[in-house]
Image 1: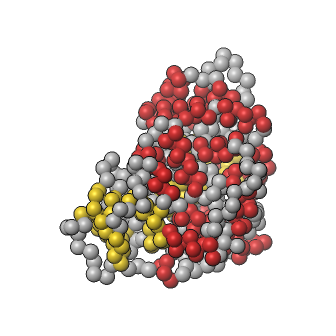
Image 2: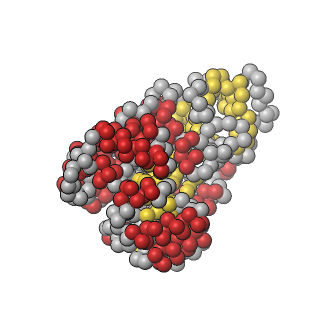
Image 3: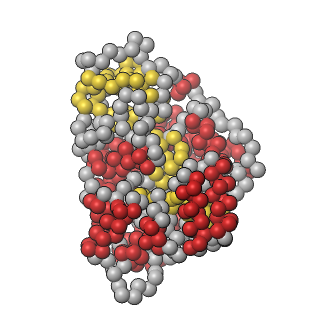
Length: 458
């Protein structure tokens, strides 16, 4: 079904391996709270070759020297919950109906992520297409963020019909075990579970993932509940799923989704946060998608940014994610917004691990921009800007098992570097003033990247 895909080749200037030196910069390594003043960072062959005080560091003679006075460097950002399926192109047939369009669209979407400083993404509904796209980025044939991807979503009964395009039914423990093994052999990075999984099927998925060393991530099975997911030490929970049920303090809850946010207490929130920390389960709150769900679209769509491809703008405007949710669910989601903020803060205080993700492009969220909006909501919930940044840098790298390679800036690490005009530790508004981004050692100035995208944004 899936042939070998022919990805467009990068322009020569995006494959340069010459060393690059950013001189006189303020460097936020994210290894601690301090920023390094007047430092130089040298990139060569995809890695940080040197980092030290500008006055003491000898810049290689062949390096491209960039005066970074007044600029701020920090690790590239990670959006740990995205969906990379090219919009408007079905997944079920492997995009065979229009492979060329799907290829071009994928390349453009990945560039939009780069423009916003996102150098790593975790794709949460994988197909064989994504394995090939991941490889194309690794080999430098497509410019884009590093891709980590789950396999097709596992579900005993599809919660909604669209899941058939990127999901797989597992109705018995034997089917579940076979599916996990097959996804492992195919090369997927993690196994994603969903809502309506039978308890014994969920248990088989857990056991097989542990046997193979695969992370198990996703929603919380209704049949297991939050207590069951924490007992299984599910590696990550998305969207705070099933926390609404666990937080509900009513003697006889009615079982309606999202309503539990309206019937909880600070004490119950603290208790559940501490239980999450004890389990070591990560959370990806995706506050921005729920905010988008409950915000009615404007009567007049905003003008399309010049760098945003017209096809992508049109598809985002036509998104139908909201239609999946009943009106009463949307009302409960909106009413419970600040309870979710309380849970986020409580998880952080309890030491429960967090990472940032946006569920882009659901509800018309723009790739990359949605992650910046997500981080803003963490600050609104009470986290400091630097703590919010950790969720999209060092903590995301730690979850992926790449703490020795990504997430902080130090000599020898992979060169994913976001360059900004202002201090992100003082205000996350700085993230919206990019000078450019280094992705896998390749320098992409923001103005050049935006201009190149604008030229092809049709």
